[in-house]
Every structure is written in C-alpha cells, then in structure tokens.
Image 1 (cartoon, protein in one colour):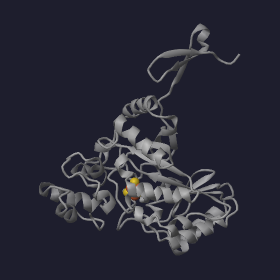
Image 2 (cartoon, protein in one colour):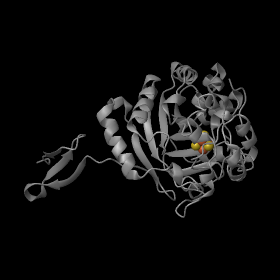
Image 3 (spheres, rainbow, N blue to C red):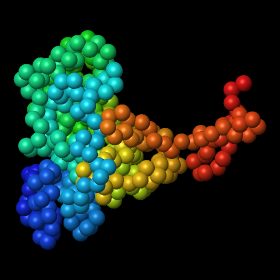
Image 4 (cartoon, rainbow, N blue to C red):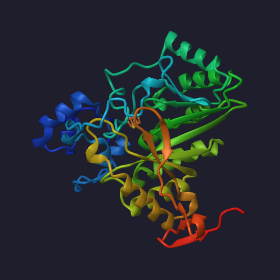
Length: 352
Ligand code: SF4
C-alpha cells in the first residue's frame, strides 16, 4: 500500500507509473503544471493497463505540452469577475471564495491549472482574507458562498471552522457550499473534526464531490461520504467528461449509480474546459450529448446529472442538452415535436 503523496516525475518513475523513455518530456510537463497523486488514488491504478482511467487523470502526459489555439490560461474567466482577490462574483446571488490554490492531487485536465500548485497563486490570508469577507458582508444579494480553489478541504479543520463561523455571522449568507475532491482522493482527511467544521447553526452546508470514475468511490471514499451525509450535510456530485476516462455509457452509468449509492446526488457533468494542453482529454459536445441520451435510457432519474458547458471567457454555465423538445411543426407550425429517448418523434399540443 502506498503511504505518501507523489509529487515528482522521479517518484512516479520509481513507482513504475511512467516509462523511463518519457521521463525527460514529463519533467518539462511537471515544470509547467503541478503534479501530485495521493496514496488513495495511486493504489487504484492498474499498472498493467496502459490506458488506466485513474492514471490518465493524475499522471502527466507529454501531450500536455501541446497547447491548442482555442485554449486559454483562464478558460472560464475567473479573473474578469474578481472584484477583490479570492472572490469571483459572476452571478448576483452567489460568489466563489478561493481560500487556497493547492490541492491534494493535481488533475491533468484542471481548468485552473495556471492558478493552482506550488509557486502559483498564494492562499488567501491576513488582510486579503479580511477584504474578501468584507466584500461578502457589503453585498446583501449574496445568498450563497461557494468555497473552491484549489481544494478548501486541504485546510486544517480548525481553520475551516473559523472561516465557516465568519461566513455564518453574515445574515444574508444562507448557504455555504464546498467543492472538493478530498472525500475520494484523501478520505482519511474527513475526520469528525473536519465534518463538524463544515457546518454552523442556522446555515445550510452542501458538499459537492468531484469524482470522474466509479473506481474513485472506493470503500474508504464511500465511508468518508457517509460521515458527511450522516452529519446531515447533503452532497452533490461534479464530474468532468474526459476522453479515455469516462466517455462511455457503462462507465458513466456506474459512476452515477455509485454517487447515488453514497447519497451523493448527481448534479453536473461538465464538458471539459479549454485549459491549456488538455485537448487529448476533451470529447466533442456531440459525444457528450449522445452519452447523456444513453444515460437517460439506462439509469434511474436519480442518476441523471445536467451536462454543462462553462462558456469560455466568463459568461457562466449553461446546460448543453441533449434537447428533447426541438421545434414547432404540424398544422400552422403549432405542434411541439418531442423526441423520445429511443429516437422516436412525437407531437405535443400547444396550450390553447
Ligand atoms: S482538485 Fe480541482 S482545482 Fe485541484 S487540480 Fe483537480 S480540478 Fe484543479
């Protein structure tokens, strides 16, 4: 069993996770984008599978050196909507609060890969943190604060608890949401103290778990989710549609079922963002829509996430289908045409 997080190409090579012939190219990747894989994830990798879906998410690939023209450093336009450091205020009723720019693992497809990791942006401390809280206090329209980053659950429970108490003291903040990979990639961090730190009396906490392959919902990860949900904290899922990881209906079905079994409601399946050097991991939107159609045919309504695109530049997220009500037709173009999951075409009358 692996006991420590690997953070260098040399460590990955020693562990037999990268071939010697690729080491030089991978050193160039690692100099550009942060590398880390936790023991929980390393232990899931099948060393005999050159296309292992866990390795593909965390082990650097020479293809990352090939940035394509539409890709950009800040794909979803965080900086354009940042009124003070650490806050992204894109929609009136909610803000992102980015406390840290570090993560327990570094995902090869990360949309914030130019911001996270050692030597990148620093954490929000001291006066900067006070200014971020002050911004939230001064904007009564902010109903929800989404703690993201980086991964906020890398912080010690005591520091997270202090953040939650500060937010909870702001009357108009009703919802505190954490976006994290920790319950899957470092389940031992979900201690009683950590779970207690996430909540405050009179406020509602949600935890959104990011996982992309059913194997990530290991027995330890399932137990970590249970500790959170048993404390009365609802959980949601977030996944990224990734070529060679989960772009087939069997894997997606197993992933969504695993979430539901863990009492984690499938929420978003993200189309992969235009992060630099990630084109080898992206699918087409048509592929995603077809997978969503197949998913709806195969698995319970409980297992259906929304398929989302974050519009490049910062215009926000939108669901991108598939769309089942496609147009008006029939006499005088008055009927709706509705497509069934199996491709059948049906009319639905307009309201008289
Ligand atoms: S955990 Fe999130 S922020 Fe961190 S590298 Fe992965 S996708 Fe990026």
